[in-house]
Length: 396
Image 1: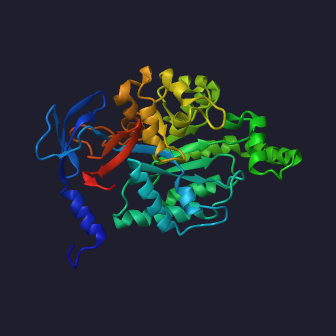
Image 2 (image 1 turned 180 degrees about the vertical axis):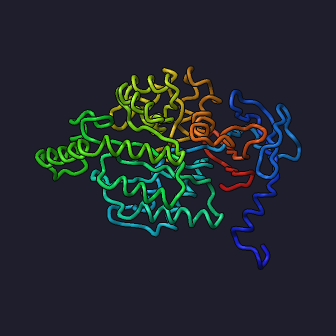
Image 3 (image 1 turned 90 degrees about the vertical axis):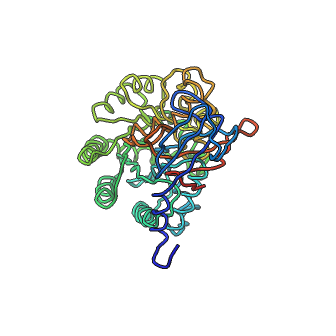
């Protein structure tokens, strides 16, 4: 770097001239796995030499070469910003720590999921929505982030302040995805109130049944007052700005019908087979949590993601709260017949989420697309990320 270059300009220049060739006996294309060499120039894939290992290439041997993973829903930035209740880390530092973990998990495109609307179910992040938004933009400006960051604004439709926060955030920052969440007791994810009571008894053992009765009734009152009108306003805000919409925790077919009427394209975490099947049949991309796959079931007692995969109605996996689960979840469903082998499993964490959010320039190892690539070893049946390349440049 010369005296006139900043870290940002030097990095941009480096990305602009990226030229590399990567060879593997197992290159995972969208529909098959082949031996070959992927040739990269100026950050794009310019050739795929199937059945040829070019001598000048970086030889990955038997390690797999897959597209960079695309993550649509992770709120894992929150524990970096607030690692303990009422403890807040400097947000700029938190963003870089989070970014390193994301890239280390093989994720080259991430939708940072930030919550709009005060949620009485969790400790408050205070002004965290806007502090994190500012920090992410500042970090992007350095050119030093490893992954490509976009924003997923998670909107709690029964929150008193969700409209104000969403409007303010949209006025200040670029948002690529919005989701419509409703965590009212007795509905959707929390339709079994007794299980929800057990959850709160474990989380806050000092709460009496009377305390929980009052809390649940307060949340139900918020739903009665705000849910319908606020949902309509949020849908309109998204459509005005051409932002992709996701539903959240659809349970009944009437929920799916509502999502379709609202122009939703992604069905996040449907809680029943019926809702997932109806969403998939209607053309919505059904997204489930990779931790659900890895753990063998939902932590909240809802439908198993593997069951949806076996039924052929699972389209996208999301790491949700454990970044490394994304690649582990994909490998865990590779043997499910309806998924379509390893190539089909990898599509659920690359091509499918990219297409669902309008990112047609990535998610697949094909000539003309971004050279976002991940080298993966398999150790005792576990996928281990060894190297990560974004636009042809190694970032992890």
